[in-house]
Length: 306
Image (tube, rainbow, N blue to C red; front, side, top):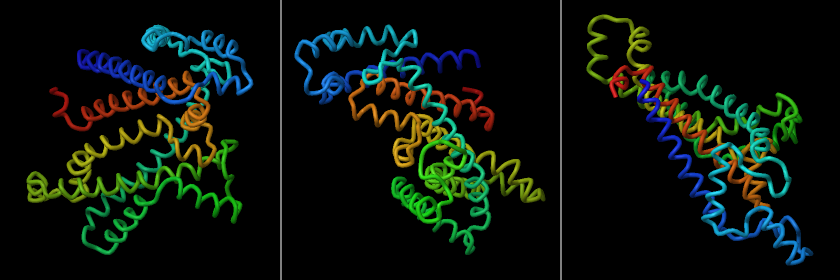
């Protein structure tokens, strides 16, 4: 287990470095000049040159990259060009909001998708199963930005039950959580239902039934545990996406998370903040993938042999 963990840590470090390098180069070759945005149209050529030198943007790209990687190895991601504050502090100040939104979303998904998916598999072919599958298809087809706008119009503008945006209270969390959870519930519900049906058809389940084991015991001890493996995979990817910042939903609901910070920073060409946000997104995906691998080993003993 120790060698496995060390191997995964090395892979995670190399993956993060590759993502940082790719992000750094793409931002530098993208159109737009952050110094021009910062100083405005009235700035002189001398002022622009001094600012570019101050932020190290006058160096060749490869030198900028080496300097950035050296600082990033000490968790120093530079200063925001627009705000003049530490990128690390700025990104970390937004991350708790993203973490809260991701946690509440996945909690709703787990509570609803897994039991309903098992139910539709057990009741396959009945009217309740058909209705659930139809509802999940509708939820999967709805764009997140459309769902968010409709919820704001209904529950905030018309009924005045919930705040339309921000994060001033716990009530502000309800609409973005539901907006994010709907398509994820649909995906995990259908996946759980499909995998449960496949496991129910397996020979060892037939043998368990022949031995006279109760259906509830078969579901708990054999079916659910094996059906969870692909669901854990998809759930890990979804959690990594949420931790990286649900960009569209955070923008629609003005939720002060990493996704909203990323969009705002892209608009003003704030390179250091964009890089910091993308590094956090990459790290979140890598960590969730590692947690998924560990979850495999807890769910299925066969993975412990690797």
